[in-house]
Image (cartoon, rainbow, N blue to C red; front, side, top):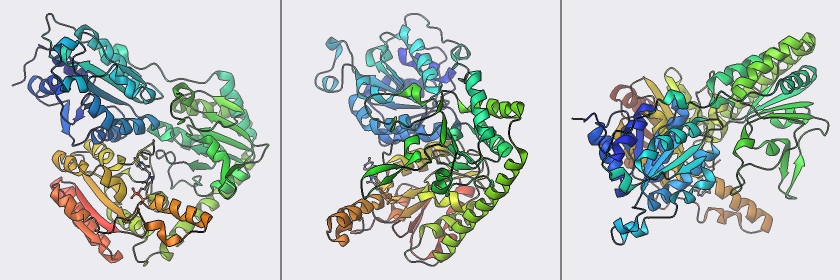
Length: 583
Ligand SMILES: Cc1ncc(C[n+]2csc(CCOP(=O)(O)OP(=O)(O)O)c2C)c(N)n1
C-alpha cells in the first residue's frame, strides 16, 4: 500500500517527478539509486511514473528518446553511477543531436568518503559524474543535500523542455537519497517553472523574409526539424500554399505531407540548382544542402547559384558546443534568424499577406508547374517499385510496399526506420507526426529501444506502431525486444534484414575501387551470414510473436497479417523477419 508522505530524500525525488507529469521511468537497476527505486515501488506504488525495465542503459535512454518524440513530453531514464552512465552515454548523445528532452537521472556512491563501502563505492564514484556527459547534455547537476532537490529537478525539467530541447543529467548522492527527511520539504508548483514563451524573430527580420519570399521567382524551402512541433507543420503547409513554395523534406521528422502537391522531395539537386532564394527551416546541416561532395576529388562544390539568397530560421546557435562538431560546417546565410519556427512561420505568412507584394500569376504558374513535378516524382517512385517487384532477394521498395498495404487501413505510426527513404516515397504521409525520424547522432542501437518508447505512448489506443528495423542496429540492443514484450506495446517490428552492415559494405567497396583492390572482399568483416541470425526465433525467445525468415516476396503479406493480428487483438508486440537485398 503506497504511503502518502515523503519520508526519505528519494521519496521527495519521486514526488517531484510525479508533479511534473512524468509517466514512465526506464531503468536498469543499480545500488546507486536503490533509494529512488524503492520509492518508485513502495512509496508511489509504481504508477505514474511506472518503471520500464530495460536490460541495458543504452536501451533505457533510447526508450526515453522515442517516448519523448511520440508523446511531446519527456520521461525519465535512471542509470547506475559511473558504469551505467557510460553505457548510457551514446544514447544520450543521440538524443542531444536529435534535440529531444530526456530527464536522465543517476546516483553516485557517497561523496563523503568515510561513508563509502570498500572497493565498489570507490570504483563507482567520480568527481563529478556529470563530467562524462557534460558536453552533450543541456545541463547537469549533482545537488548536495535534500533541500536542493526541488530546484535541481524543476530546473532540469525546464531546461530539457525549453527550445532547443535536449537531455539533462541529474545525479543524486546515495546518502541524500536514503536520508530520512527531518522536516517536510515542499514540492513546488510546476506551473511556475514552465519554459519561457517561444522565441520570436524581431519585426524587421520577419518583414525582410516576407519581402524576399514574395519577390523570389524560384524559391525553395528546406525543412528538417520543423516537425518536432505538429502545429508548425500545419503552419508550413499554409505558408507553402500561399506562395506555391516547393518544399524539400530533409526527414529529421515528418515536416511536410508527402501527398501535398508542393512536396518536391527527390528533386533536390534540380530545385536547389535553379533556386534564387532558399528558406531553411531548422536545418541541421545547411552547408551540406548548399553544396555537394565531389568524392573523386574530395572537395565540396556549390550546389546553388552564387546569387541565390539564403534565409535560415533556427535555434541551433543557442546550443553550440565545442566538443563534437555536431553544429556542422558553417553555411553562408544572407538572413540568419534565431527563432522558433512554431511561432515564426505563422508570423511570416501573416506578414506576406499584409505586404501583398507577390504576383498572383507567378504564384499560380508555379503551383501548376510544381504540382506536375510532384506527380512526376511520385510516378517515378511507383515505377521503381514496379521494376523491382519480383527481385530476389526481396527489394527494399517491395518490402516497404507490402508493409504499407498491411497497415494503411489502421491508425499507424512509423516510429523508427527511414529505410533509405522508401516509406516516404511509397506510403501516404498525409499528416504531422506519422514519422518520428531517426537517431540524430548516428549512433547505432537506437531503433529497438526508441520504438518501444514511442509505442508506450500508444498502449491501448488501437494505433499500430511500426518499426522498420535493420539487423545491425538491432544486434546492438537486442534485449529491447524483451522490454517490448514485458510492457505489451503495440509494436510491429519488420526486419529489413540484409544480413550485413550494408552502409559500411558500401564504404569498403568504394575504397577497394579507389585502390584497385578486389571488390569481392568488401563482404569480409561485414556479413552476418555464418551463421545467419534467426530473428523470428530470437523474438519468440523474448516473448514476442515471431515470423520468418521470409525470402519469397509473396509470403510477406500473409506473415504481416498474422503478426498484425497479434498486435491488434492480443496487445502483444510482433516481429517479422524479412531477408532483403543490400541497398
Ligand atoms: C555505434 C555505432 N557503431 C558503428 C557505426 C558505423 N556504422 C554506420 S552504418 C553501419 C551499418 C549499419 O548496418 P545495419 O544497421 O544493418 O543497417 P544497413 O546499413 O545494413 O541497412 C555501421 C556499422 C555507427 N554508426 N554507430
